[in-house]
Image (cartoon, rainbow, N blue to C red; front, side, top):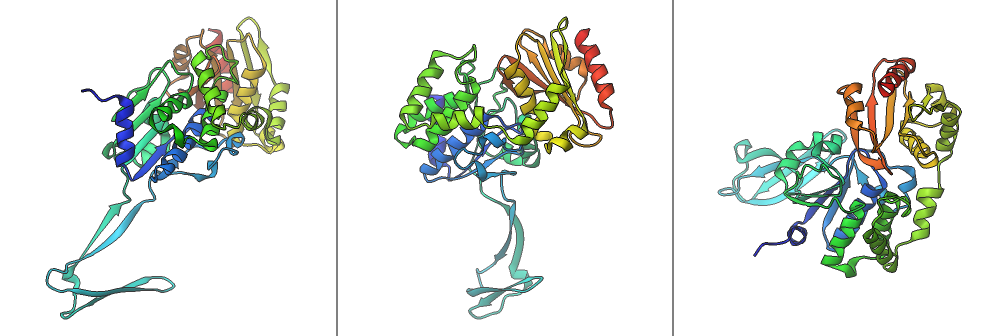
Length: 381
């Protein structure tokens, strides 16, 4: 009898002692909220769980339970192991003494003394039984987390949970549902099939946050009846809807508001091309006391507050000589064609803003004027 994907995942959860929940380098509310919900759920199963991402936590998501528990790598490195052959010489006592610049380890035998031939030295990786990858289409989406621990990803069983078309099914087990509006919706259904009684207020709040943000508080045109049903069930479990709305949609940092104001002041509109773009110089970031992490939120503000344009772009230099381009491309426009003309360094981000796909590109030693001129030429052609 064939075992369902959900049952295979449950079986992996039961067998694993230490689990890593890994999220993409570009963190979204859906991936963060889903990852935290999974961490809380697995901890209730008495599992040792770490949650990892090489990305920066968005400020408006720091209200979520255990949002401060992220780490930048899958494991905390390796252990240096000293092995002692006790087949002939029996060990009586082990002790150690710390000094300012070294540690001395003492091995006392019962009779005949140990010598260097009785010792062996090795490195052992921290144990890891399972990796759960949340919200990534491919392993490359996990950025430095994957690059620094590629061997771990290949040696360890992987569960891949995602809702985006184009997922590469890179997991040992793949739970991919492209009809779902969010990864949080998929995980909600998984929990309900497993041990629904473990879903408490914190887990429900995390999952509800993912669904609410992904559907723009149920205003997105692709919001499904199933998303409404899952959200209502999560509220019945204690999901704190008003707390989510306040933090995700109504709370914005002062640096973001200042930078957003500067972006508005520099906004340029081309009605014929269906294009809106803004250019932010290094001085704009200095005067608004903001940084590179605010570029995408500024683009989001444009997408959320204007309509009728097919392409919305922000060209910004948050760090000297390191300009950055982020472009929101409406699904009616072939994003692949724009990416091809931008060049190999342009990449499609693993999330959307409403009906817009997001392209990003970084530059070295290029001027904002040159980037703007080249970008406008590509779009208008």
